[in-house]
Length: 585
Image 1 (cartoon, one colour):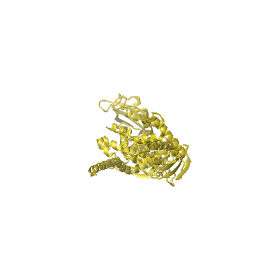
Image 2: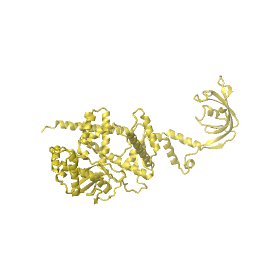
Image 3: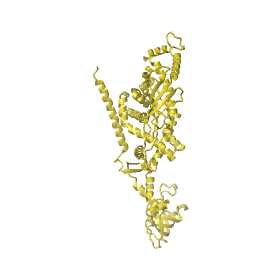
Image 4: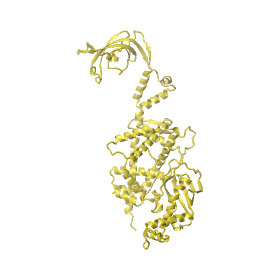
């Protein structure tokens, strides 16, 4: 089963460690199955795990420091005395944010490492003819280990590995100010070096290693290198009806009143001041009954003649009235009124018109906009109104907008991304795709056929450009947030955490490690959102408005992913068929 399979993989020494960037995207899969996919993939080909060069030895996986700046900007540095006495190093920079590190261990250092290895192994191994724990002669140890492992230079290989594990990290970090990414790899396999290694003599060990890349913006004449991003995305049009209603409501607030002559007949849009005395209507539907409670009537009431402003019939009953007249106006209270003694009741008001005015709504121009807010233009006012009305709909297309922004942002970054980071990002996505196939019903045995180095390399070739761009954008978000003073408040993070807990209340509670990871993910997501909003406000994005349903970006992405899955599955099936059909030699 899967558990047995991954356990057996681990027992064979599958060990790998990468520095991972947090992403705004959540990975919806079983952690166990993700580990299974990655373990199976990384143990099928040494090209994916640099442990392979050690032939079963220890991995050189280091956890890098965060935000460490390189102190060596030249193409090569050295020689330098290391913090580990008895060794020196030189370093040469290579393309794609990698370096070649040459470590020279002195004869005294190698002899000391050899003696220490002999002492430790003497206490652990049992050799016929020698009492356990007795310090064994080196030649006896070498013969014993050679017999046990099938490698005549196993002891010396062990010594070389111990030297590398002791000095490489300090060489990279302390002497060259570099953060290793992934697993440093010996250029010459350890058993090849062991063949010519002699304790007491110096040895040169050459290491290839990816390092954390330096971030830089491409040269630009812009005020800020991340402003003015260009691109285009599609979305449905804003709700023009709601926008018009908001504009008219704002104009209505700034309407001007011009008193009329007594002979002016009220029209829709006018305003008047009235005294209102209300009565219940009797069963005949016409006659006045008991007076309404005092709160339902009033003196010097301002009334604007507009549709939908008051109870049905009230405004219509005043149309045509003149100052000095009293008009009976029939209407009914809403049935949903809290005061049940009035709810749904038919009533009549004696409305005395005291005065009338003509209301004039202002035109939407710069003068009007300046009244709304000092310094605002009509164009800016309309933009702000549309943004406020369109907020909910716009959020549905934020992902499409951010995708375009990210593409433009990545193109402005001058940074090499190491292959180990690309492999890590792509492998996570690859495992996620395998998990989705499994969820969709694919059998585990069929999945094993897909999880091959060949399939992964094809997938990596397709996904590498996106992985590089995503890494660049992640770094850029941090840089922009620092430059602009953007941060996420603890309260915002806590609110989101509580929402997640509430939505998952039927599931088992999160342990502290899971909650910590959730909080980190939320912080990254919220920070990215803030930065993207800043970029959008200072961008030159074009929006193409299309009718709802005419274009669905998510559907296009899903179709592309499905096509890629089918392509990988077909390629794996073809490879398996070819293997079966190969003639036996």
